[in-house]
Length: 183
Image (cartoon, rainbow, N blue to C red; front, side):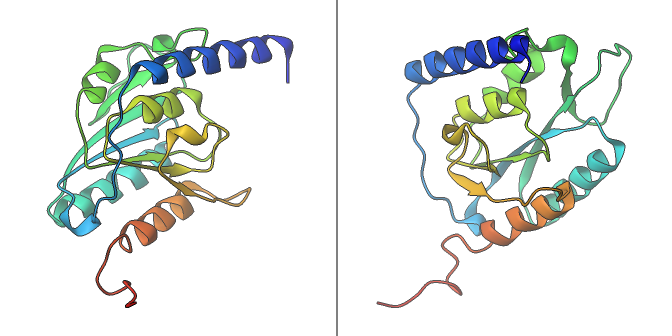
């Protein structure tokens, strides 16, 4: 790891831990069938991933869920437009903390479930996940274990499609009567 990256990582973790100590969380298990609102924060840099996440969101909407998307675009281009809320590299501080009105608006929503979708380490998305007040937070394995209540193990080299399938698989089994065991 480069020297500057180590410094960034130190300040990122320090800022995140400070922020987490100021927030009171109310995490709870949520039955996917009864969840009404779902937030999805994802890496929207790649067009293929954007389309896959939009397809997944539309499938959730067809199942009666209210879905709100927030994408992170790892680009400094200023003239970007997408059919969902997003923030770019221009709106991320040197400590890797996202600072934008779109992020603030997204964080004010108390989702039943927050899903984080990205295939490579992404500190801005992990930050949003960690400080979200959502009842259940789901995402890929990360060193920042406080970011998620349900961590999905993704083998090296797997793509976003794999992660989405795993998230969907496990969410559909949370408190599902079909999978409950009798004592």
